[in-house]
Length: 81
Image 1 (cartoon, rainbow, N blue to C red):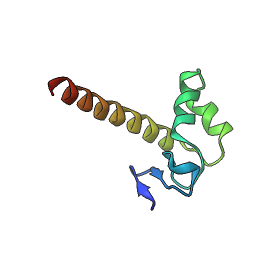
Image 2 (cartoon, rainbow, N blue to C red):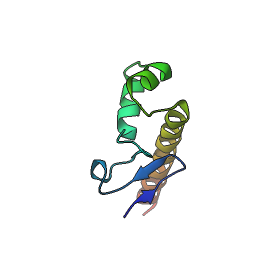
Image 3 (tube, rainbow, N blue to C red):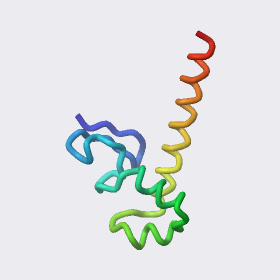
């Protein structure tokens, strides 16, 4: 079953093993983030990954930010318990 994570991020067991990816592509959010961390610019990513847009990159960063906030909430709950 396809799960829409955000306006541009989806998770579908039939696409990339269900890992979060950019909607309509097989570009993993992880790949976008790893390449940014390695020093690639947004323009580099858009040029190198067909189908990727600047809006997709922004969505990947929002997804990562929300994921970290969720993890922090889980961590705080574990410490309180």
